[in-house]
Image 1: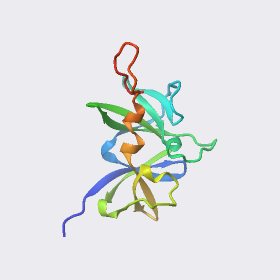
Image 2: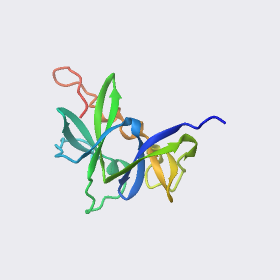
Image 3: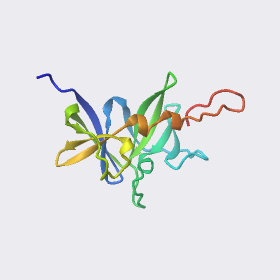
Length: 165
């Protein structure tokens, strides 16, 4: 029997739920720095942060997933995800309540998301995997951090293309 493919995932908490991102797309985890608000951005885009001289869009993943917000929720870290768009690599900063550990999960141990019963829209979930005595939802990075959504598609007044928020 051939060995099943195994991937590493970073586990994190968002709004009281446990999620995972494939570790290949995660470049680093940081404490939350000052976030600069961007006018007219959708509610789940909290603004931008300075990441070693580059602006990184800050995505409030809880809001994007429609998880309930509580007054006591204070995200403790940013998970920096590298995204490619039109030949360039851009960092996207995902707010997380907590980051836990990197775990290995075999592809065959990932079940498709159920049609109902998830705390979040199934479109953002690649699958479910058993982790300890519970399950972890593996997030679809391409849908969650859609660069077409993050990019301003209209040209600037000078005709130059807009960069990501």
